[in-house]
Length: 431
Ligand code: PMP
Image (cartoon, rainbow, N blue to C red; front, side, top):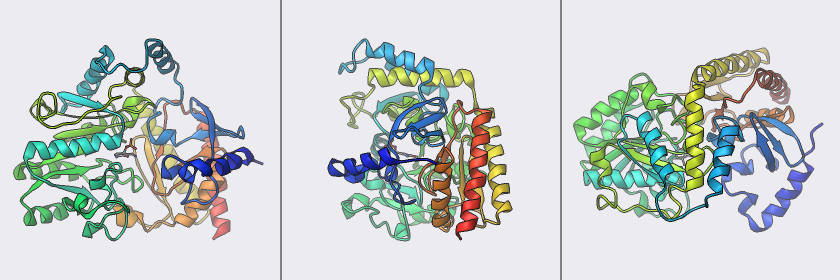
């Protein structure tokens, strides 16, 4: 039987000087109850907590660790970079190398600017869209998350959504008065805003939504959106912080056949270090300082160690080309989830795209935030803890995607499969 004593002790200690003992809320396990795990180390497809419990890792730090943890080549590149210094406040060759890899993968990007997080990438992209179009308003979709900048902390939750009420305390009304909310997979809801407003700079979207659980765009939703926006002279900002280099090397845009005006990246491009990026065609990027008058800067942006990690990760990823395997692995996982749920008479819907997968504890499809929210989070909580006890580390929320890494083995899949059986049984016994 698993023990969590050391995690428990660290949690209590952590509460003194850290907020909720965490530095990002989802890590607190609030929506599944119980105390959060403290992690000691990770290698390949596995992660180990401070009580020495080992898990198959389907969190992967919420996406970045696509090769699994501490891939040999990435570790070597990081170690080598460290020996030359940590940060210089001046340009390095590695920034040029990573920029080329990124721009080669995304046809819509002639130039890129590196920042330190997804949040920063997105807030800079909004500023750029406004600078370029000379317009102020932005449309985002209900249930999509684009980081924690003021203007976008709306309808990252609930029914206040369509009213553009701030989704977080401390966000002034003025900061969200230019944010309009549309419904995912509903082009008409976008068009309705354009009928009322003539100062819309851009629409921002998660091309495959991953922050209301995994929700797929309907056929041609993004293509039709792009065509419409071109007519209206507004920009399409595609937030590929989660999907970039994860859906496929060229991101979701490649698969969906759409090219963004501005693309946001994060997670995988840093290979576990804090890197974000935004990029676009030359004409747009030339607005950015020092070429243009849109200011955006960063003391640690393009950090040499982080760049080395990103280059090594993307180079290895391109070589491995694991996307067909991800598809196969995810499809097997989907079948296991659905059949096990059926065996125990539990309502379950599974959404997946590439190496992102999400079981929703509900009957009926999930195509938007409203439907996602009808999931039974109490069942998920029971399921979550039983998965933990059977050695599988999952995101502690019904609304977070599970991620696959290329380090996963057949044996891992067997372990996950057994855990799913135990966890579904527990859910059936509990309700
Ligand atoms: N955009 C998307 C689509 C994301 O999934 C996230 C993080 N989950 C962000 C932006 C924010 O990135 P970060 O947490 O690195 O600030």
